Length: 209
Image 1 (cartoon, rainbow, N blue to C red):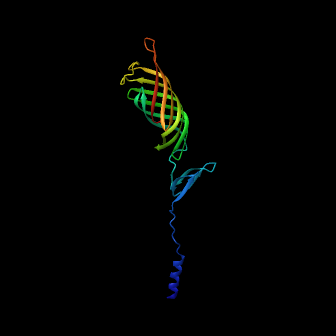
Image 2 (tube, helix red, strand yellow; image 1 turned 90 degrees about the vertical axis):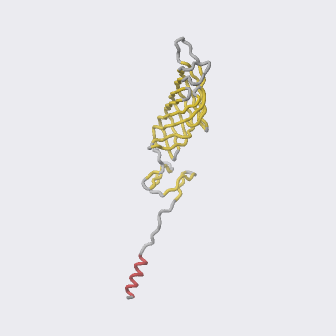
């Protein structure tokens, strides 16, 4: 009987303690705390900087590290558009990391407004916060600068006296964004049958890029 009890005590002593290994840890990137996770792998670049963390098979950095396409949006108010919304895309070398995107390339924009519709194309640099939709980077609260060639068609909703109610204009615009978005341009009316053409200054203020 004593031998049986001794064997039972020996088995109890040999059973390992179960340790809960699910403790959260803090991982620092530079000087800033950016994520609390249960890591499986930490990805670093050649400079030993943390560029991604993979937790249970899912990356915490939802953006691709490199992209060639960034979509952008803006809302503006100004002359001659009145109120307008802008849909744009940047095509070029774009890097996204930890919800931040920056890039330089060709910018294409379509801007329908209350009193006009405008299309622009040029060169731009942008930098700022974004998010991803189905793996595609979408810029939001972007800072940057762009120089663009513009074609604008007024719709006649607002009286632009002394300008024609409806006319087509060609010109150049500069777009600057930091806290607020400002676009300034100079446009010339496309040649009319009478051979005359008016010059027009454009200006808008808004948010986005």
